[in-house]
Amino acid sequence: MSASFATASASVFDWLPLSGHSFCLLVVPGLLILIILWLCDHQYDRVLGRPPPGPWGLPWLGYLLFLSRRAPHKSLQALARRYGGIYQLRMGSVKAVILSDVTLVREFFRHEVMAARAPLYLTHGIMGGYGIICAAGPIWKHQRRELIDWLKALGMTRRPGETRSRLEQRIGRGVDECVQLYETDADVSPSSEFDPVPALQHTLGNIINDLVFGVTYERQDPDWLYLQRLQEEGVKLIGVSGVVNFLPWLRSLPWNRRNICFLMEGKSRTHAIYDRIVESCENKLKELQEQYQEKQRQRQQQQDLQQYQQQNPQQDPEPESGSEQSLQQSPEQKEEKPVAAAAAAQEHFLINRVPFSELYCDEQLRHLLADLFGAGVDTSLATLRWFLLYMAREQSSQRRLHELLLPLSATPTLEELQPLAFLRACISEVQRIRSVVPLGIPHGAERDFTVGKYRIAAGSMIVSLQWAIHMDPAVWPEPEQFRPDRFLNAEGHYSAPPQFIPFQTGKRMCPGDELARMMLTLFAGRILRRFHVEMVPGCDADMEGECGITLAPAPYKLRFTKLPPMELQVEEQPLVQA
Ligand code: HEM
Image (cartoon, rainbow, N blue to C red; front, side, top):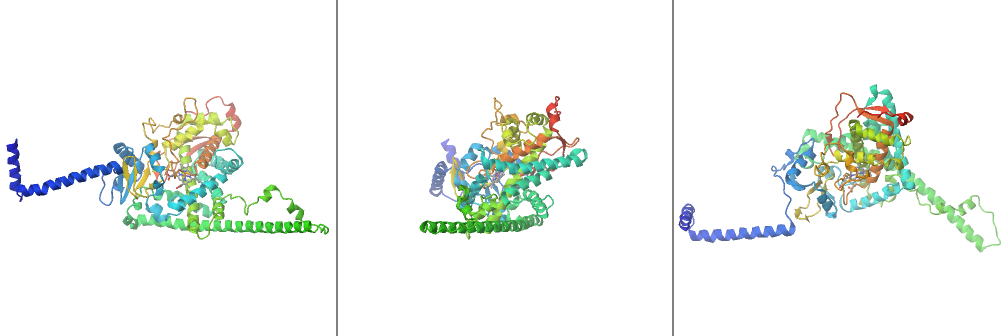
C-alpha cells in the first residue's frame, strides 16, 4: 500500500512544478489554515448561530422569479415543506427569512429588535416610513401607544361598559344600513342575485370613517367613490412579494411606472381630502377651546366676586345674571376638559400633537389616518367577503347558524351574539382557511440577531407565513375543508389552538383585533339573522382569491333570500337545504 502511495505521489509531483519538499511547505500550512478556519467557523456558528437553510437563487434576482405572482404564499408554503419552519431566501438584494412554525414566530416577534419593518419600496419608498404600519423606531412606538389609548377610549375593550356599548351602537348603525341595502338589492335584482361587496364596502368603510375622521359619506359622494376605488385597486397593485419592492430598475418599466404613479397620485389626492377633514376638525377644536376659555373666564369672575363679598359682608350686590348657575356647577362641569373627549382618531391625535415634533408633523398625521382607514377596512372587508362566500357554499354550517340566530332579536346585539360559540367558530374558520394577510406584514431585523441556533442578519425581512401556519395538516387535518368544529372543544365551547394567529402576535400584533371581532360578529350575525345566502345556480366561485397586500376573493354574486322573522320561528322543516 505504501509502495502504491509512493508511486501515486511521485506521479502527482511529476505533474506539478513543485518538489516534494516545497509541496509540503505550501500545502501542509494551507491545510492547517483551512482546518483552523473550519473550526473557527464551527465554533462561531455554535456561539452566534448559523443562517437558516434555504434555496439558492439567481444573481441579482435571488428567488424572485420562482415565486408565483398570483399566489406567492403557496410558493413559499411549498418551500416550507422542503426546508422546515424557518428558511431563508434572497428576493433581489433583500434576505428574507420565512417562518411557518408558530413557536418560532412567537419567539421572533416578542423581541423589539424584530419590530422594525423590512426595507421594501412599499413601506420605505411609497410610504416613506410614516404612519404606523410602515414606521419603525421612536415614531412607531409613540404612535402605537397613542393608538392603543385612543382605541381604549373609544370602547375597544373586552369588558362590558358604557364606552363599549357606545362603540357597538356606532358599528351597529353601519351594519343595519348594510342589511337594509341588501334588502333593497334583493328586491330590485333579478332572482335576488347581486354582488354583496359594494354595500359592504360602503357601510364598513363608513364605520371606520366615523371612528377615524368623525365623518360619514353618502353613497354617491365623489370623494368617497374615489377613496373606495383607490382602496380596492391599491391593495392589489403592490403585494409584499411584488418585484418592484426589491428590484429598483424594474420600477421604470412602463406598467410598473403606471402602477406606482397611480399609487403616488392616490396618496396625494387622499392626503388632500384628509387635509380638508383635519382642517374642519381643527376649527371645531378651536371653537371648543374658545368656548372653554370663555367659561373659565366667567368662572374666574365669579370666584373673584365671591371673594370680594366674603371680604366685604356689609355690601351685598345683586348677583349678575347667570352667576348663580355658574357658581353651582355640577361635578362633571368642574372636571370639564378643554375639549370634549376625542371621538375620532384625528381629534385624539390633534389634541395630543406636539407642534413641530416629527412624531406629529402633518405628513405623519396624514399617513397615520390613512393607515387606520386602510388597516381597519381592507382586512375586515376581505374577511367578510370570504365569510359570505363560504356561508353560501357551506349550507349545513349556515343552517346550524340560522338555528342559533333565528330565536334572537331582529337586530341581535353583541351580548346575544358573543355566546354563540358556533358563530365565532365559523368566523375563525374563515379567518383560518383564507388568511387575509397570508404573508403577514413583514417585519425587519434592526441589527444582527441570534434566535435559537440561527443567526439573522441586520436588514433581513422576516415573514410570518400565516398561510402555511393556518394550512398545516399536522394541526388542521384536511386544511382545505371548511370545518368550524375545529374551533369547538368537547363541551361545545369555543377554543382556538395556539397556531391560530390571524392578528399576528408579539410587539406589532394588530392593535385593532377587538374592534375587528366586534365588527365581524355584528356583520356576520345580523346579515345571517335576516338572509339565507346561496350560490347563484350554475356559477362556481373562484376560491383561490387575488393576492396583493391582502388576499380577497374575486368578484362574485350570491342569491339573498329574506327570512321574515316570525315565519322563521315556526318553520319546522330545515330552512335551507344542505
Ligand atoms: C379581520 C380584521 C383584521 C385582521 C385580520 C388584521 C390583521 C393584522 C395583521 C396580521 C397585522 C400585522 C401585524 C404585524 O406586523 O406583525 C395588523 C397590523 C395592524 N392592524 Fe390589523 N387586522 C384587522 C383589523 C384591524 C382594524 C379594525 C384596525 C383598526 C384600528 C387595525 C389596525 C392595525 C394597525 C394600526 C396595524 C399596524 C400595527 C403596527 O404596525 O404596529 N386592524 N393587522
